[in-house]
Amino acid sequence: MVGAAVSGWRDLSIWAEACADRATRWLEATLLQLPGQAQTVKACVEGYAAVLGGARLGSRYACGALLQGIVQQTMVSPGEFHALDEPAKARERSFLRNSCLLLAASQLGRVDVLSEPALVRLRSYQHGSGGFFDMDPAQGHGLVEAFTTAWGGRVAIRFGWHEQARRAARLLADIIHLQPDPAGRFYFCYDTASRALATRWRPNQPAARFVEYESPAGETHHLGMMLAFLCEMHLADPGGGWDRAAAESLSLLQRCGTVLFGLPAMGTVAEGLALAALALGKAGQAAAEMLQPQVASLSATLEACGAAPAWDAGIGGEYERAYSTIESTGWTAVCLAGLAQTCAALSS
Image (tube, rainbow, N blue to C red):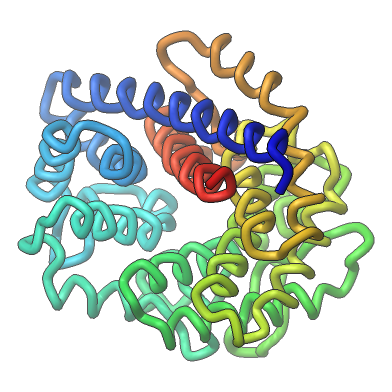
């Protein structure tokens, strides 16, 4: 890479790390200062991504205190974290919550939390198809999703579960390859019973069943996470053919064009593009150049947010499963931390 390009990646890495650090510090201050038992439990339930973001960039003391609070308030069994009176729709993020907390525990050296029963439960979220359920598989809803599968695959890579990661990547490649309407919509649900793509029905929200490329729908952040996982698979297993699946994923993302960069979820998309530049050579680098013009715009957005960067992770309040400020800011910190690490690798 030429010197100017290397300098650009270095600048982007420094900027992303500063943004992630700012979000993490706000989260630490917010979660550690909340008064009242009920508020503490709610914050612990919502703070799962904040803990992982803190484990990457924040104060180990503050992050350890947050993790300890969550363990005390919400761990109902090894590897399962939720409030006893939590609404069912809030539990639909169980896998993301449990995986974030266990990954943070591994980075903090908390072997008491990272127990063998906890890891067994985490692995139980993976279906035989390779996809990961978003909530306890004992509930038997029968659908795995592209985003949960991509995130589950990244968790598998972190824990060294290579076969689990390969199975997730194979299913994700199939989901991408089988898209029935590639010019206009992306279907992100897979029915494990019929072994086919499916739509997820939400009452009075038929458009929530798929992503339309010309609409800034909340589900578009799936595309960035899918690309990030498949690129990581190619880097971890260069002979596995994952570069072809990653290239298809990149093509899907490119069809969305500038729609994605108008979303608060750009951190996720940006990390996927940066990993593409690292994993896919010139084609990935050319696509990742789309990041550079967006930095000033996203930086201005962060500045406008003030002390509380209340980004919505791409899912606004009009959606049924809207994220809280704490959850969405936690995901922002996680994504931007990943972006910073990837861009640092590109600049070396």
